Length: 470
Image (tube, rainbow, N blue to C red; front, side, top):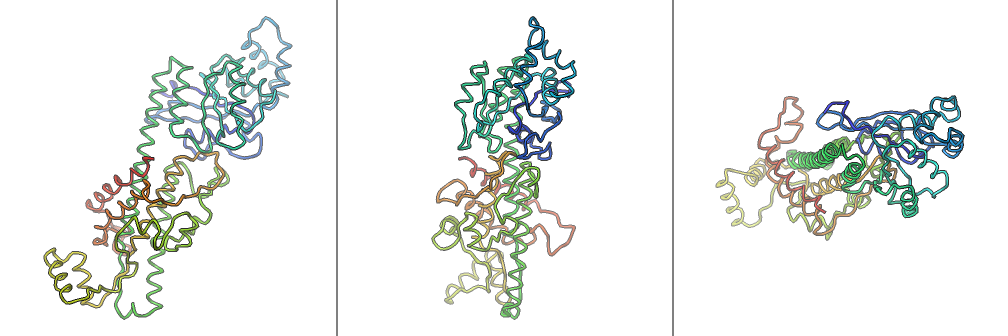
């Protein structure tokens, strides 16, 4: 496929209907155009390509809003009666009014004559006024297939039935519900499949676009799971050792724990930023594509039960996390207490027979009077659950959205809870490999991930995928 073979689609509609936001969502280009609540934000025709396998498959044209269709319809009525609707449009475009009072409408109609089809974006929250009938008639006059895209259909103020009735009255029976604020699952495929009914000679090409987008979505989800699994292994591998003397000093102990918390916090925020970028959003895009994920996201303390409660993720006795993980939590391990002599002898024997594994290491530390500080499993679970909830929200978020993304509380037995719990259990081998922490041993720049670490991340990633089954 070459750029010349790209399907040319004009995105048209009334001012502030969400045309640019729709294009940002369809192309996942957060920097395209300008999104604003101010009417008439788009003043010129701009193009953006949807690439498939590195080549332009669809070329979209973002057009200004139709501002005075009623007056333009009256103006066109004065043209030669025998002319066809497209001929009248061309006569109008050659006249002085196309560069004057109707300049904005002329830009739209000029584009309409040079495309394969058009998406008519409709804000279904708007009342069905007579001016919209004139807009539809103007667009139909260009003799190009028009596919209405019903936007903001999930809003409580939606007037979707009234709009469908109007569109059907003008022969626009094929309509797509695509909420640019919160796209439906499968909405993109529906969009291109319905367009294929209007462009039969491009049907195979459009099906190829839909198939590519499905594959791309699956790969994006897999990449998100891999990134979250990497965060989990990274955090599970963290281990800081300190002498018993230092650990007994409350100030030094608090400083050590504080440093560990900051390390985990920074890793979690980098993961969050990577997920935002993966789904076409960026940190600080409020001016271009409003994305206030959760108030306080940049200072979310994954060690604080109150912060977790505010974010919709519960911690503590009797909460979902404790019930779901079912493994030992040890934020600060002050050595190891084995109790009775028989238990001690059995533990030592077991550790020696296993080549001094994790338990043997702890016994050795006890003999050397060294303590360890690691990240407890409850925090690891919260890290994973939070990132999964964020990913789920991003999969259903379009660039027209301005409201907060809120993370719902994990529920016993739901897919994200099961996946997060399984992932934490699967990450336990990382606790015996502090060299797997992504900063390496301390801050050596030549650190490289081991094949064993990457294999564990791949395994954990597969356990996270079922979180999206629902």
